[in-house]
Image 1 (tube, protein in one colour):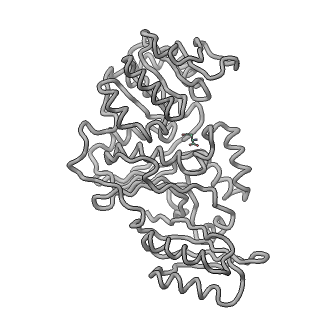
Image 2 (image 1 turned 45 degrees about the horizontal axis):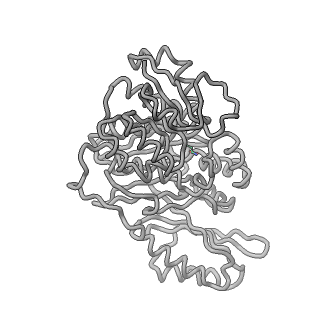
Image 3 (image 1 turned 180 degrees about the vertical axis):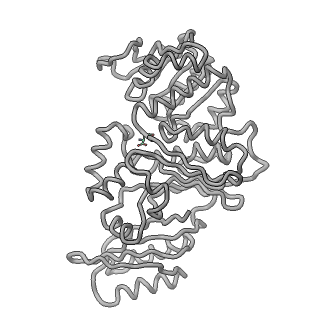
Length: 421
Ligand code: HSE
């Protein structure tokens, strides 16, 4: 019998214990051995839980138990989780984690420390979608040309509701929290950091690139308003928070930001808490992955799949996809200012003569060609909603800087990148 200890028995941890118990027969058949969650660690012991496992509020209850074979780390956060996982590995236990923040910062060190011990993290990216295995195994014959995905269920839930029901971001965020989709600190969702953590994990597997969240472009959805949905609907776009990794020559663009995408794309149909990821391989072409990206059962499904995989195979696999580092390939992180994209700008201005001409001249001076434009009259100002043809990020940033200083511009312009597939 294989014994599992769960550190962090919240929504996901409870679902893991329940799946192991309720699906015991099929899991034993697939793994070849019976797997039982015997122990759990929780923060608050007085909270009532309907589970058949022994609980403690001390992680050593699991880490120092020689009978525990697999430690499931679901406590979240970076520093404490790092120490717990390190100790578990030192004590010769296999690891299964859903902790994307931990991996965003420590994946290469942990890979080193794990050595030959199994270390799996399927649930860390896109909840129930088996995207890690798809990338690590299914697409391993390919150079990955691009990964573009909706990887945060909370943001997708919010953007879908804002588009369909015309409600404000704050109201919908509360709903997502009540449904158990959001992170403990929801700014991780809204600010794009959660999606960035997931992107860094995928980009290590695809490109062997060792980057931290601080190194990449991360923008959240906090500034999106109904005005932007108005433009999107008029011009045939959807607004999605996309995590993008793209190979451009020997460089990799890594970025997370709200994005306007053609409403007819498959990713545009990924609504609510669902996640969707498009991966383009040089040999296979485009492949698409769709499923629940958050929620107890979906995430626990991925956690249990890792446990079964470890028990079934009994050995580790190259954690980040490569048996050797990729020095030979020489891929490095692209600089943000060289990103080439189409852009949308919302500029709030005083509605008077000469304003449009001045703004248009700033676009011209920065060698940016306007693709479409509409003016939305408001009570005491007007919104100029403008999209551009392709230009470099440094050009649009310069134009935004110049526009911001104009005396008739009433608020900082809002920019959303337009991604073409
Ligand atoms: N808060 C995350 C989301 C949970 O909304 O997608 C899954 O990582």
